[in-house]
Image (tube, rainbow, N blue to C red; front, side, top):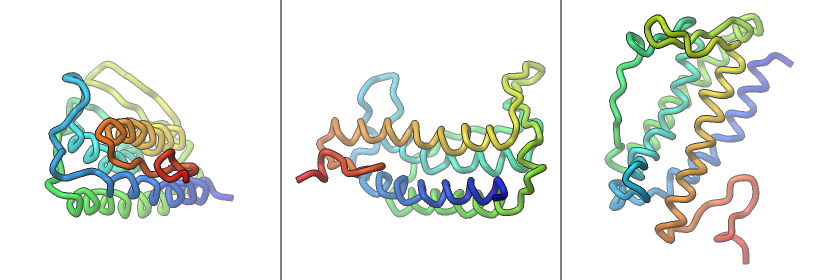
Length: 166
């Protein structure tokens, strides 16, 4: 099986789980955060929707420099509709980029630097899983805690949640 087929299957499995939790984010509480050092709920949800852009980044930029390749703007989607639109846009790009990769492409090294300081040198297949998939799953877990603290029913991810158990 080509590497891209395995990664696409995983992405397509995780997509509805991510969508399910993003749909629960209340638009009227996007400024809420559990701690002063935490992201707001709206920023965290938007960040989750944006994480798939790293898949395209890994595919298209072999030597990624935070000093020149990353124009960070901490966006907050104005509504659930916009949040899902952001997610769908990055998802479509990720699927397209993964589909265009060969097994040889996945074995190429992705370098992440901050100017002259090299932070990571990883095979692209490892970078895509870490920066694209695991990154999103990590923040999805954070968002589930935000929802729980606000008494918003938490959707199950890999089985039913306590809110879905009867």
